Length: 136
Image (cartoon, rainbow, N blue to C red; front, side, top):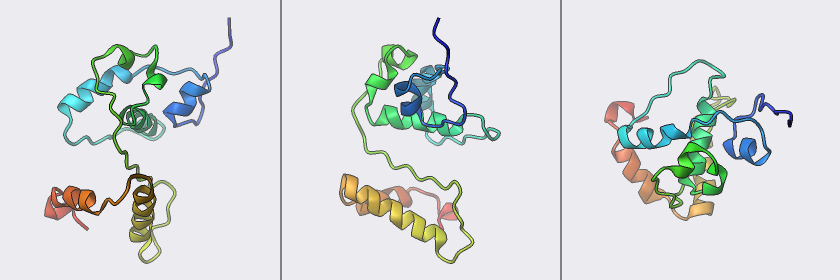
């Protein structure tokens, strides 16, 4: 029997699967999340798999079906058409500096525009749907 390798401290779904680490399959939750969730607030304690869940969803939206081979999502009726994924990581950032958040967001958007093309219209459309009380 092969020794199981545990992904201690790993938060990236693709790395866990591609490098052969043990993975507890929670991909069966993708379809219910997409069907019922318009806005989803993940309120779980630290080290409880939030980043791994988001990384799993990222792989799904990127259409990386090969990563899901043998998992529940592989046999589900899901749309595997790749979509642009914008991932904003606010972990370990210093927001005490003036314009720290704005600078970080502009950097992310610049990178994604290089990858996907001009995003101004997409971002403007998304921001217009955010209730005014939540806008910065």
